[in-house]
Amino acid sequence: MLKAGAFILIVLCAGLVSCGDEKWNEPTDVRFIVDINREAGQGGKLTFSDGYIVLGDFSFDGDRVQGDDVYFTNSYPEGLNINYDLNPLTEDLYFDIPQGTYTKIKISFSTFGSDDDNHIMVEGIYNAGHENVFPVRFEYKAKESFTVFPKNSEDVDEITLKKDNPVTPKIIIDPVYWFQPVSQNLLSDADLVDVDGTQTILINSTTNTDIYNVIAGRIGSGVKIIF
Image (tube, rainbow, N blue to C red; front, side, top):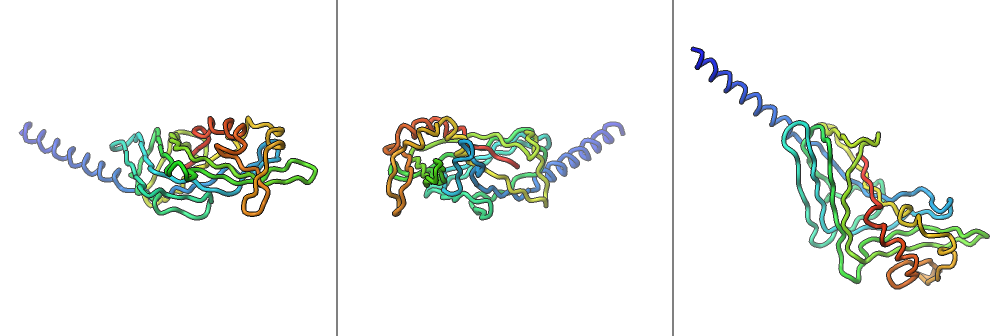
């Protein structure tokens, strides 16, 4: 009788574990959006509002308290062009991710394009003073990889996903951070280039290269993700 009772108990426990695992496999609707830091930099003289990034891949690696850890990766062989905007959602960045408490999430992605294409582009305005206001356009054609450890809205690593509670994490590209070491003198002395009929501070690997070289070394660090 003891052996039979023990066998029944083991079967019941196995059933409970199975049910528990099934619960933690239930998905949360997670929809990533991409935007830029729209706060003013350079003492309020430099702001950014437009642009895009082209992704070649996107991966999610999460450590969970309940159930198995979660990993997946998506590839975009034609490139995924995303405009910076808090409103539009990109279906290729919609994911069903198992619910649970994640103690750590690592998100990685890299840019896509040929050597002649912009992988990253940002546009903004620089106010040089004395009514001299110039558009700014930064172009980046090199492939770049990013690894980001997201935080929740309270700046904590632990993130909880719940079934039937969709979330829209924000991927924030930060050109304000990229431009931090660029002095106002460099910007004020930059060469102006005609872009679509407007005199513009164009910054890329062949134009205003002194500014470009300062920014290029900071690109990989200028991203955060908030759940």
